[in-house]
Length: 264
Image (cartoon, rainbow, N blue to C red; front, side):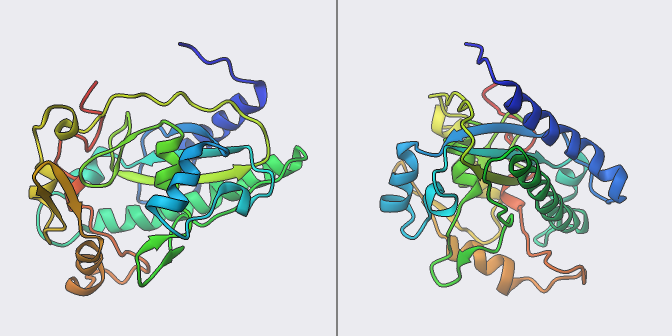
């Protein structure tokens, strides 16, 4: 089914694509990106209430950030294949991967600011949320999850590595903007993208995890977010003094969903 989008929504989606396409050349970044995956979630989707009350207590509803929120614009910015391949070997994240995380976080900050200006100039309200570092440090739970919004917006499905698998794979960063502008939600597909969830095969991300943060109890996937956090902050001494390069990414590199949706 083809969705018919209003001109404002098409303009915003084109703005996101053009911004990402031009960013490397304009800012002379080391990082290269592939085409973004863009979607819209209904800010009143029942999944937000379920997220807040059952899955992630303390998570904000969109309307608690932007009163009267109607839409959540979400975008996934995928890394180039060269960056992903650089992070396959070894226990520590590669220099290219660390730089990509830092530069993509800055890209998202800049893009969210541009979208905020665009939307508010049109007379609507919008959020201007940071791409990361907005979580409870004791529970390791986000106050606002861009990744969960991306799922609600239908641009991907979760793999057993707890990452979002999109049409451009899972290696990249996610940002979102909440607004009281009424936009058309992206259609959310029913089928799973993760090969294990679809066919009971693969599990390569579990083998790739260097701190055994994932396990299976029967058919139930168990994710230990504290072991994941330990790998990033406690076990590895950063080799590159480049700021907030706290990343690992081993579970998502060198797997079938690194670059693409393996279902396709």
